Length: 600
Image (cartoon, rainbow, N blue to C red; front, side, top):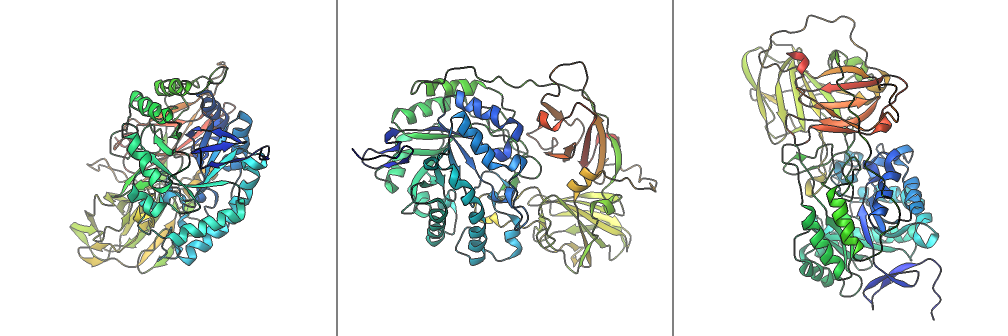
């Protein structure tokens, strides 16, 4: 008998299966993204996954989450990936690690850091030298951290995915995949199973698969399971059948209906997959939340909302759903479910209304938001050129002529990325929006401040338009004349919120009687006291925004994310209890970009 080391994980090609510690092994796994679930709740969500009968979890590593600024690495607090892996291990879950560098994931720029775009002509996800150099540097930080967590080294990680659905990308650069294969082997050794994931068709596998990386596929419920696995067999004639992304729901976009996939549809196809002995990962098992500015977008430009609920078996808030129990029942037909109680749905609490007060408009508190002052340039610069990667930049120029009659301000090359809130000397003029609103009429006198607060609504995470520059990426014209002489204020809104936004001293008489009831972007603040005498508070809750339009909200300086009830489908934002305190009032800060109920 061959001498099998005590801990080993590999592929048995003759038997078409994985082998764990010398025995045939099939996994049933579920996706959870540690970047979308508060650290406080990691254990709760992982336990619920374990109790559903899962053997493993699958998670993405978003590069830009850990290296937002070039060369500054953050693995602390909610970004402590090692702690997340340790928790999984303690709970008895194996881990399938999707290490990137690109992850898609409906995450800003598919996990690639925006600073890569400082080289304007860079070809992402290819053998572009500057791209490879950055990837090599990042992987030399990430992968050595991961090595001790590999299964054969006593950790939970059984497999590591290289890149993500590369067969769906235009570049089709095998040298890039070879480079990654070599790099991963260098840092992780020769034992670990490295794999790829692509759409279940020969078309997708053509550019996505590479010798030396085990090719797996992804496909949705309700389709032809036999045909899907036949596509995998075209790349891997022998070895285990694997669906790395079996969709339990689907993603949402602002302005589109919330995606729902019935539990029975998923249960039926899951049964078919498990019946043929295949391995499966349920994407997502819990979707979670795109806090702050982390959501991605698809083309034509459609950003995803703050909620990444995904209609998954565990809701965004970790609630047990009908779908959870339906899928657990199917899993129970193929393996013994763990003994013990399933952690319950977390209690929620309604804290009532919060009264907000106007603090000041963005322009009024500009000095506090942009302490280093403006950058001056003849033509507008992009967010990346200003080294501001997320949030907002205020673009200002003087009106070159009197516009007593409404005069067209336009972005002829669709260069507003992604939304600009336009005002002249503090009077709101309207909104320019990428792909949707390329021109508006404005009025004002020569020499007046023309201000555009430009919002980055999330970078494209899929397809060839991944190199998503933000800000004013091409010139604006006023009645056909190109506007020049710009001052750009990069805004550290998050820093200012944490530090306390200082209201302006001399509050001028506000412009009154604007018929459209629109306002210029304005900060509001209020406080929420958690009631005493009730055990176990604070609890999770949701914020709703009656009469508010679009903006960003912070609780105790924590950036909860974007709200946009005017466009939907998401109307309420999930508030995990860990951001609330009961010992003192909770600070609520809102940046409303368009119009609030306070203006009526």
